[in-house]
Image 1: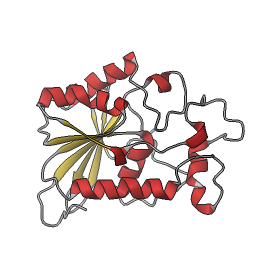
Image 2: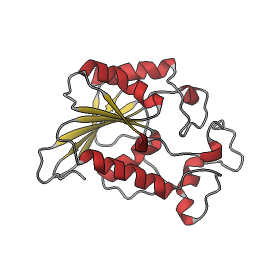
Image 3: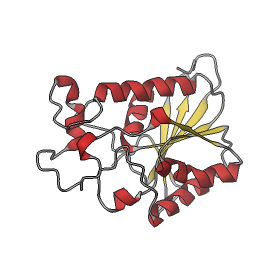
Image 4: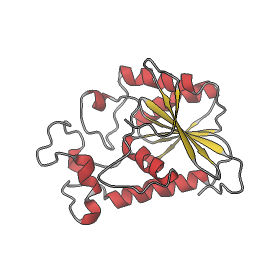
Length: 217
């Protein structure tokens, strides 16, 4: 993990990928590789616009195309290569991947169910264990932060980013109440002696406006 006692504060910008075709069709995507929708491509441009005046040293994404597509306009603007990492991929939802969100039958709340896996109540066939998912993301984050010394951007997924935020903000991760990561927000996390977070609106009436603290409504 970053040694915040010895280094000058750096900023980690954390974004969720823009709307994907699976999101548009209201499907559970998980690790399915689904591209951005037209709206998602516009959201990628909004991310670039907000980060134009920030000096980024690196851009990291998962290896799924929707995160790479979201990061590309920002990477092109800053002249940076996108570094795609398998370990930043979304949670694997097993048999629920590709299933319409509103057709879950016994899977009424998939996000709550996967978080119950550690208590032996996993009912989703083929899904990743949630403890393994958390470990995968936190270990990847530790590796990244051990090598950086200036501002970076990570473009991830809903569940991926929830774990990252919980880790960096030292929140107790309640498996029944999550940080509600949306693609209309960019999180600016300053890592120093005290970790702080600001939330930046992407698109809409308040595009580019920065709010103090974690906004997840």
